Length: 274
Image: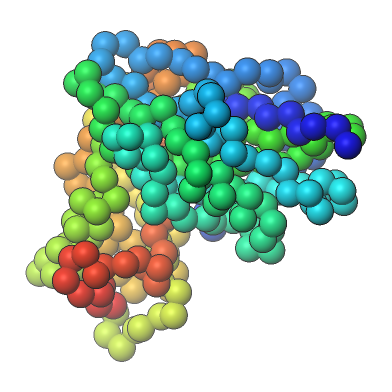
């Protein structure tokens, strides 16, 4: 059987509560993409990126054998923290839930491999990022494409040298902000609502200097229960490594999805109260 080709790219469709872009279209678009966009930001700021070498996430990511035999395809969005050592942690998957083989393959790669860590002020820093792994076929040849963007549909279509903004904060500090924000006097949760799977998604606009320009709730489940406004509180005062397009800092979009039922608040004393 022919080996899998691994394409490391930097564009991604909208994910989360929105269906992933059809893999057939992505196959057609990827004919012109052959290399990872290893753009470098100016100064001492650089986003986390897919690294090269035997210890990279890419080196540990493989097409699931049974899926390869059946020529099954999938697009698996993921969100995670990349630490100062480049190690991904607190991984969350969104998108199709019936692609178990692909999720396992991606989870294994993220658990064993590392990223090139983000840099700010000349030193490695933790960031929160989003990306997607595409498992697909070009003719009879299996291909894996890793993208480090989740929020901009146009960037999906262009499949250019693009990395979306990354939030300059650790997973722990972000969750701490959400935990304390729930007790703000102007936060109001709908009385009697204790949903089984409370979720929210927020889209942020970030300028070319990494400043937060605006945020908006793009999904909340159940609607109107207060989980969307709570997630927005986590963005207050946030700083970002700006998006890179062809190696140059540009304005971009950053989205975050919170599944409150899967959040572990043991680190901050007690669970989130609905």
